[in-house]
Length: 213
Ligand SMILES: Cc1cc2nc3c(=O)[nH]c(=O)nc-3n(C[C@H](O)[C@H](O)[C@H](O)COP(=O)(O)O)c2cc1C
Image (tube, rainbow, N blue to C red; front, side):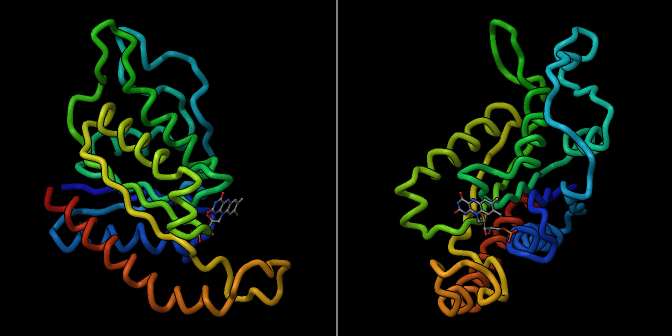
């Protein structure tokens, strides 16, 4: 069993990366082979609408030969996928969005009967980290966005898709150095010490669920 984790944050060692890594550790605890991909280490672009993946002789396979292509191939053969992204301007990061375009559009069929070109089921765990509180997240409507992505993964990758959120994350160890007075640095640090470990635990458990699916 192979589980792949995708880190869609540019910051290594920070919230998203740590949660993805923990989910991979959970999968490994069930005997899965794991791989971590840092999107920001790679040069790649979103879908260029070449329609190679819709050609009769190549349907379901992206053909845009940049650094992402081999990763898409491995993801297409994996047994579980972890997609971690910070929320940037109310969305996943640009790199994660480009990854999602490339991964999912290749499986979209324009056949009358619909369906997906994928020939297997890939369970997906989405991990989102964000600045806002859980109450703000609900008020702004992020949950609908996350449900939309879950729906796409169920439809195009087979699923089942699940979601883990980590809110009010620590953005920096040194709030005093930045114009960030709207945040209560002490409260953020306290949350990092007391709540973030619980998020890591959830990530481990959900990753273990993927590893034993
Ligand atoms: C460009 C940018 C835009 C952001 N936009 C939002 C946002 O719209 N909503 C939110 O809750 N947090 C936002 N954040 C905060 C990050 O989502 C949050 O700090 C996240 O945990 C960072 O993940 P990392 O520590 O893994 O890099 C933004 C951060 C950056 C750098």
